[in-house]
Amino acid sequence: CVTPFLGEPEGYQYSDIAATILGDPAAKEEARAMIEASKVTKDIPVAFTDGQEETATNEVQEEIIDVVQEEKIEVEEQVVEAQEEEIDAQEEQIEAQEEQIDAQEQAIDDEQVETIEAQ
Image 1 (tube, rainbow, N blue to C red):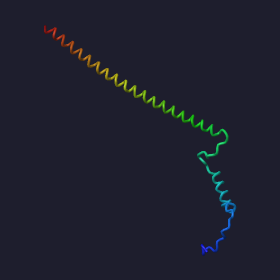
Image 2 (image 1 turned 90 degrees about the horizontal axis):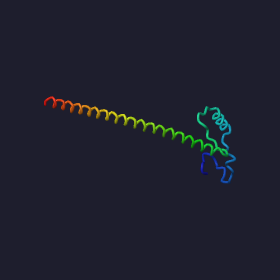
Image 3 (image 1 turned 180 degrees about the vertical axis):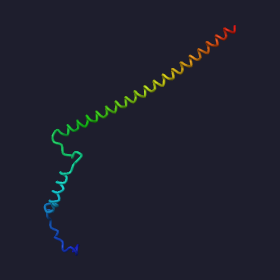
Image 4 (image 1 turned 90 degrees about the vertical axis):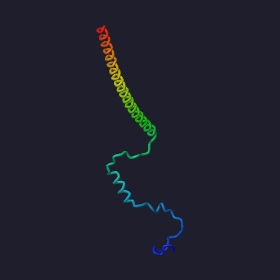
């Protein structure tokens, strides 16, 4: 005897266990009812029928393409903005250089006037 506290074993002959162990049908029905009654917020996965898999794949591909295009546009806008900022900075540098040139030309003119007056 292997388990003396539980009595003698039923035996070692083959029997179809799957037919004898079905679980608790009442518990299964209760679980199904609870699942059906619950407010599910996500889609419950189901097997595709004919043609649905290709349709779903195409929809996902189109969604991915849309997202990628939106991100590409966003990046292009950021690049344009950065280029515009760089152009603005270069224009400011040009203006500063032009002011320096004007100041140098004025100084040269003033010096020439002084030289002429001194003669």
